[in-house]
Amino acid sequence: MGANLNMTRTPDVHFVAEARHPGSKFVVFSPDFSQVAKYGDWWIPVNAGQDGAFWMAVNHVILKEFHVERPVPYFLDYLKRYSDAPFLVALEHDSGEYRPGRMVRASQLVEYRQVENGDWKYLVFDKNTHRPRMPQGSVGFRWQSQKGQWNLEMKDGLDGAEIEPLLTFLASNDGSLPVSFTDFAGERVFKRGVPVKYLETETGQKLPVVTIYDLLDYRLA
Image (cartoon, rainbow, N blue to C red; front, side, top):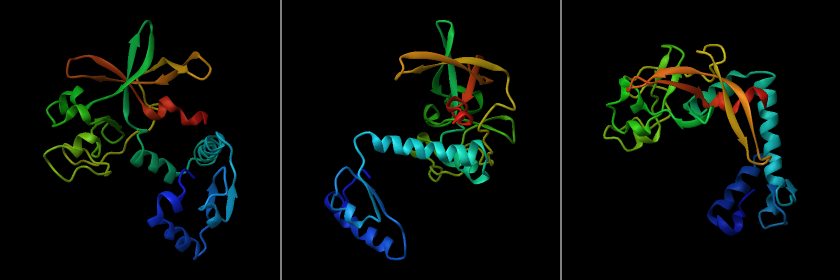
């Protein structure tokens, strides 16, 4: 979906035929019987908006069957290593309510305040050491002087220690706060309790932080 290979990616279209030869199945989502649709084992003639609804349904099934009802270690490990789910977000208090703010920067903590590009390196909470750590791979590592750390290895960018990031603070937290979320489609604001931890910043401030995972709340998928 999203590309007519014959017209827009002509050098790649041979890969479709080659993939089908050993038995791969090819599904085409397209409102018209396009040139690429003729390669499909199935052509699904969607209308405008149906492609988004389809993938929302796919996401729902994946989260429901492989996470909510039956947590799968492979799926959890994927979330920890290859998504932003375990990264920390600061809660902002404004007009009497808490809202998700910016991702927590490494430069905000005493331990990492001197690291190069610290404003562009983000933090997770390590299960092994019970403290925030700075995993390699965020954009700050791409442009730093030292090479070789712009990767997806779950290691601390300062000392190379292995990190096991926590996805959720549900079982280990410093309390919970009512966080406000805006439903732009329904033009309303609703609140949900989110487990938090408090980090001491380099200014001495106690900063309430949450994981992106807890903000998304996959358990309710």
